[in-house]
Length: 295
Image (cartoon, rainbow, N blue to C red):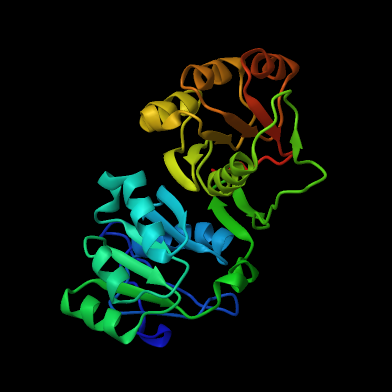
């Protein structure tokens, strides 16, 4: 189904009317089936995340507009396995966005999902997906150019129309600092950057726990209990992992991380009490100087 044939007949609920408009900021894509209003929102969330990892083998799973799992791998198949392992319950019927071409082997691994979104699909993959009635979306605009298509964010409210520029924040070596006595390993820093990129696109307050370039837990849209929720979800996988937050954390969050044996915390900034606490218990702490709030 090409763009010119694509229409939306209803909103989130069937009693709401809806439409989709295209302009010069619309990326090129095609879909094997009609997409709903909710599908478009969910796919957009996944594309926002995958655009952070366009140059590696990456998999993002999205349930509704919540990030379920993100994983990288030496191959796309490895990344799919890692994403499945990260959150097996939400993998079923999820919308899955990948950064590389889907072949028949990858398509078979994704048999139980709702929609598969990828830059390309091989002929054998298309035949398999069609025969199993699985919806797939081909993103024809290069993922490396995706952020160029992000427009100003507009929200219409009874108080007025809010407009802001898209969040194109990137880590800056001038503000990216290890502020703890304990210094992280190269692998831990890689996990920290990975977790930071995921947290950037999760609804605030967001806490992401990650290890070996895959998420162990993603807490999003929570308030004071975001850290506790993420740590409980990660369970034993929190050991020696990285915890990333989109806002500064309090001492009680750090204490919870210590109890769960988190190895490294990455936050926008940290109070002197937080630094004292991580130094007392041997955690590594990185501050980025960047706050990524998302409502």
